[in-house]
Length: 323
Image 1 (cartoon, rainbow, N blue to C red):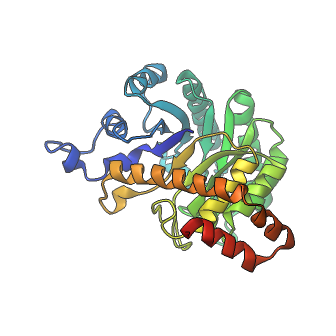
Image 2 (tube, rainbow, N blue to C red; image 1 turned 60 degrees about the vertical axis):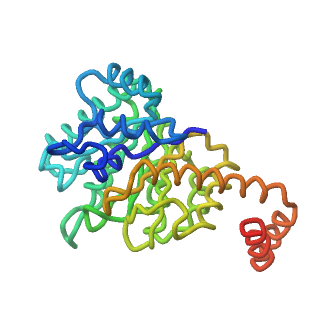
């Protein structure tokens, strides 16, 4: 099984790793620290933040550390104008810049030997009533996504939805709206990245969201973390919603997901040891998958689910989880 992680997590507690460091650690310094995590197989890199002019050489350097590149994730910070939209910006020149930047990111992804580009379009949305024409905003988004999907049909493009932040209202706030966009775009290499905290924040049940996506599109990425459903907390896996995480793992396995489990957690927010934190996340997921195995081998659970017998299902899950 592939386990990937957020590279910026490894800037946490920099003095513990680099006592003489002045300023921020480099991308390669963070990657070298991540390589210490037992069980970690992959990194996801932000584009263009983490990627220089030679993605193939970067992939070789990361490979020498014993890790692979799972994929790249777009970040639209290079132009301050992106704050009011990347693919949905009112200025056609800015929209073109965002689309061309994404195409360059896709090319870099492929040059690094990966085939997954994650789009988090957090700048595409609105903040006020009467700020935008919603039909126009939606059409710009669909046109932009379709164009970047067509740029390299062999690269998987995955939309990571989130209710808001930085915009007050995101154009892709939940699973249903994202699936509507995917239907409109109508490209075979397009799918969805499920971020557990974003799903909670959208008031969705993670396994249900995964099942809907598998029915109407494809889950191309899974970001595990946790939170209190009020914001994107980025807590450790299973820290708050243990049962929901296990149910999600069971659902995506049932639906054939074979991608990496990526940890989108924020140890750097409170100065946690990022190596230990990531190792515990990996151990937690492995334990949860063993519980999934036991659940799938227990005919009582399938019968309870068939009857929608919540009490019996809870009794069985609690027994297999807690003994």
